[in-house]
Length: 109
Image (cartoon, rainbow, N blue to C red; front, top):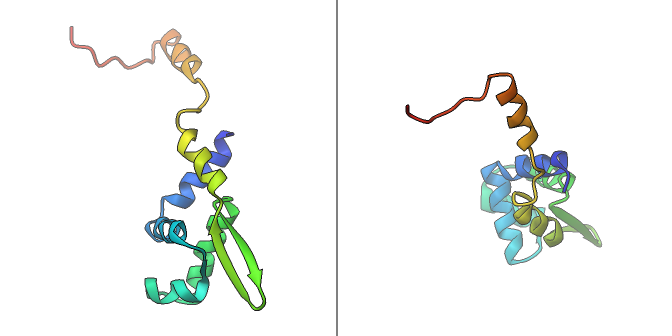
């Protein structure tokens, strides 16, 4: 997974409300109208949180008549779970700092 996509997903998950929405959707698909009373915030606020999660590709929407149900994009969440392990090797950056004498060492002499 590319860094920008991973960062966007982690930022989306960094909000307690959105994280709780993910936990709820892990149980079952939900409509916005079900989430409003759970959180005690307005429908537009819930929709904004869901939009942020959707933009990060963490949830998908499925229209059923006039209703829109949200569900987890489990594939994307699985990739994020593994994403931290799959971060690119940035050791070259530490090598550059060392060459410039800017690498901080926490060793005691």
